[in-house]
Image (cartoon, rainbow, N blue to C red; front, side, top):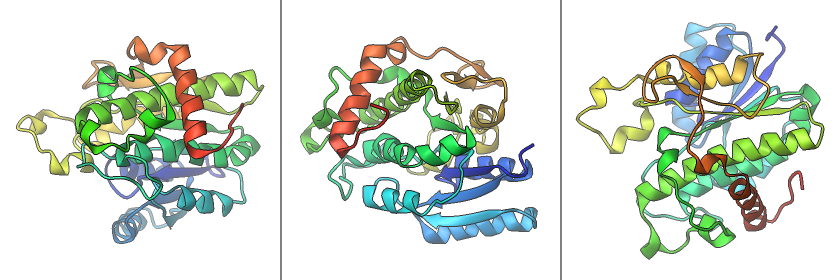
Length: 284
């Protein structure tokens, strides 16, 4: 039964997040839609209400890259959370820093979601819920030759390669998802952590980076199948990585990911570097 379940989805106003919101609403979830752009968020929520008049949704304007906004949002949640979907993302923008001085892609794709997960863990524990993280097939190009708070911060413009940085953030999402599940199990928690990727799907992320082969890609609704399965499949026990069976296309299934994404020493370094960067201790 999902009638009394509550989900929080970041980046819910478009693309994969919006399609996932629609799917969960149809399953009876109450969904807190989180996005940084108010106008687009309201439009998306109204679209859902038109197709699902009984939808139990609410809109929350939060920039996940702004750590104070993340903290304030989480503090206002006074109920159990069955599902946290860390979906919001940036892909290949020009160099910029978040208000906290962290390179924008890493701030949005990983660091803000790390903090949000930590801040909502008590709510997730109350529900014995799950966390779903959004990675990408390009996590395979992630490098992380070293993992320090300074590397995560990425504050030096002259060292910025936007596509390498994007790949590194998506490797970080997968490493975080696996390390979180390991630490939850070690702590005896019933909360589970699952990671997913959509394969090749054209969403709002690509609007500034069109490709001549985009017509052959999946649409957002098809791409969202992996994260919907990760969010709802009762047979998952945590630690899985869900993606299309043919990597870029196909029905979602459990996949392996890159060798680097399975490196437990690397995931531990990422965790500790993220804690140090934002000044918290999480499941230490």
